[in-house]
Image 1 (cartoon, rainbow, N blue to C red):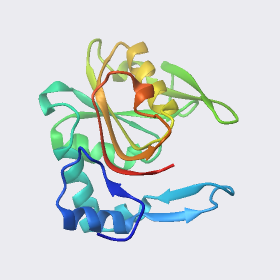
Image 2: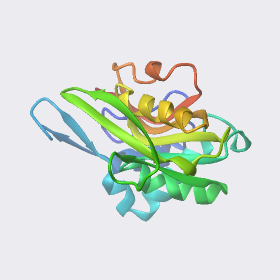
Image 3: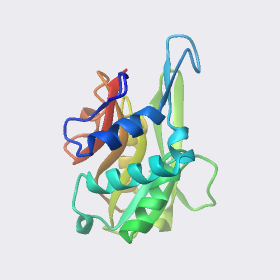
Length: 193
């Protein structure tokens, strides 16, 4: 495998050569956006046809629930927008955008959550989720679980049911998955926080 502190998650199934290739596309950028942060640049995966195919196939193969156990995929802004719609289309599901507050026309459901230095809010169009609809929430990264927990609460507020969570990468040591409760979760790759 490529020398990296990024590894295949223990529960993920992915061919070793494909895992190595996918990991090789993720850049680690020290000191961005500020000193002490190791930024994981996931964008090169999308610029590489093979990497994108590996990613989409791996996400589908490692769903936290069966394909028939959810009705739609909700992707968090912004990188959840990059692979969420492709996953939804390939699985025959709809896609729901979870956007930063103020980006969607009313009526919306809004949920706020804490950040390291302040608060943020996310929204879903109120009619995007039918009552009782089962939603799989996807995002590129789970760290502390703040935005994913807010997305969970937002889906419930809009009348949906959370089927589970699917992440590309998990930062270890921050207890993000534990913050989500007992919902089924999956992540493809892990790395130290």
